[in-house]
Image 1: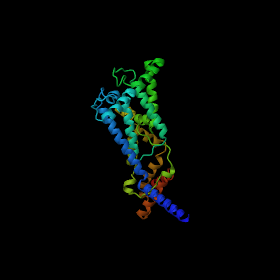
Image 2 (image 1 turned 135 degrees about the horizontal axis):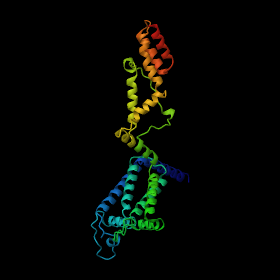
Image 3 (image 1 turned 180 degrees about the horizontal axis):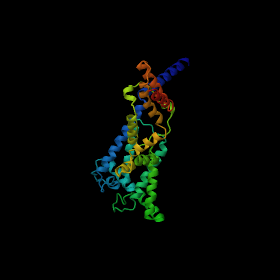
Length: 326
């Protein structure tokens, strides 16, 4: 009995060691790539089947029970022809959207992007396919493989909405539901996209202090400290103008309504936001003129400290005293 227990313990230890070694060989990244490549291969197969689809290659024709079944001309063979024929029968042209969404999902898995709230995204994708089929549900094709442009599902959705809300109401409802489905199936929001399209890319107002990195550098006084601060203000105004790159801003500039960038820079300067900076830039020249035989490097260091602190009132008093002394 003791020998059998020892042998069983050794066997279980070997099995556990083999399982751990197999887990190390087949990592999670490898499994993810295998699934992604399999999905991409399936999507490519369906795309080829859709491109070479023939209306005569429906499922009943290619899978006949007699001895002489029809040979399909589809590149995907009988399986591809029956798969695409079934998709067109129930979803019509929405089958193309379904294949496109499957390709996007497989590419997302391949690039190792984490998909959050995937049940919601799957529900949004399914809702988008149904709405897309509903758009073409009212168009009759007269084909056995695709009776309407939206298939059987699209025809039922369109008939249900058009009967109760009319044709215009049906298309409005389908449009709204399609937008909602798009937002559910993606990580995008409608308002930021519309805002950036109309007014240009905006800078987020909320900034986390832990993400900020402050670096202090000593710059050349001949470049940084301009006598009147005009160069610095022009750069700030140009940067503000570049940030306003929306459609409305471009139309306003085209019709000569005004430059939003220069206006925002001027308002910021008048409001005191840039006043301390401009004052600190103006005063170093007066302080350099009013030196008392000190070392120029020490004067530059004092001026750098004053520019960092940006005192608005004290440098003006010193400048007035320097003028009175002259």
